[in-house]
Image 1 (cartoon, rainbow, N blue to C red):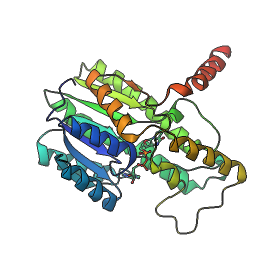
Image 2 (image 1 turned 120 degrees about the horizontal axis):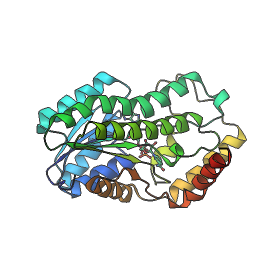
Image 3 (image 1 turned 45 degrees about the vertical axis):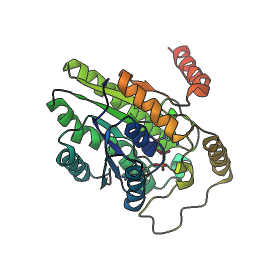
Image 4 (image 1 turned 120 degrees about the vertical axis):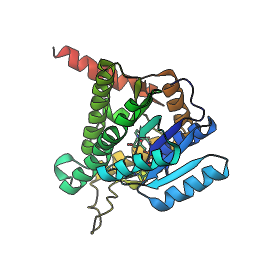
Amino acid sequence: MRELRDRVAVVTGAASGIGRGMAEAFAAEGMKLVLADVDAGALATTSGELRSAGAQVADVPTDVRDQSAVDALAKAALAEYGAVHVVCNNAGVWTMGAEWETELADWEWVIAVNLFGVVHGVRSFVPVLLDQPEGGHVVNTASMGGLFAGPFIGPYSATKHAVVGLSKSLRAELAARGANVGVSVVCPGEIDTPLVHKVNARPDRDTAAPEMRPDVQGMLGAMRDGLARGMSPRDAGQIVLEAVREGRFWVLPNGAHHMDLLRNEMQELFAAI
Ligand SMILES: NC(=O)c1ccc[n+]([C@@H]2O[C@H](COP(=O)([O-])OP(=O)(O)OC[C@H]3O[C@@H](n4cnc5c(N)ncnc54)[C@H](O)[C@@H]3O)[C@@H](O)[C@H]2O)c1
């Protein structure tokens, strides 16, 4: 989608971090925005700040775990602007712990937001993009954790691998139909966002999260340090914008230094064939 000015972008998880970074990059390009997040207060603040900076913004509090809420988001976007061109299924959460020690409700939460949030976005918006002559573009946020796996991020890693997989299939399906709809999958390395400070923060938890074992704590500390030194969300957003413009599938902001890990995984795989 080469011309982005005056096009409409929908971004989930837009109140904070990478979603906000994408929104800022899109706004700077002259796009119209529909921003969605489950945190209505933070969403109102972010939308207000972008409007003050001159952007055209509609904000729609949305829980991406709920298909009917994402359908309502699509309806609201069409009611506001009459079209949707770029859809960023970006909202995400995470937990840390050994898989067998992770509460079932935590597994379900991460899968509901990180995987079903994307599924709902695809189901609500792809028909809209297919119906309009100018087509559109779907951006799904996965992670480097969707390309290889480390310890204590099982649910997160499972959902991010799933988002990579469904994005590859989606690209193939749209190509098979000859559709004018592009797909990108974003696999960021470390981006400096509050995500790591919200670990195990399931909203419906009625007791304190179980205490982390020292090995998990150690890994969390390393991740916090890594993200604090990471790329800015605004720069990551700009990289996504360029990928949409150029129709690139793989988008790996700050991913280069993970390539050895990825190569090792591939070598292990090929050695097993
Ligand atoms: N920060 C990183 O280094 C990094 C690396 C790889 C992938 N990612 C991915 O990037 C995406 C954005 O994460 P971030 O780092 O900007 O974190 P963030 O916490 O700053 O932003 C995530 C946003 O998603 C929202 N959200 C959570 N649950 C939701 C729900 N049910 N419905 C709607 N919105 C919901 C949160 O309120 C928050 O505003 C996530 O999918 C994350 O997994 C981040």
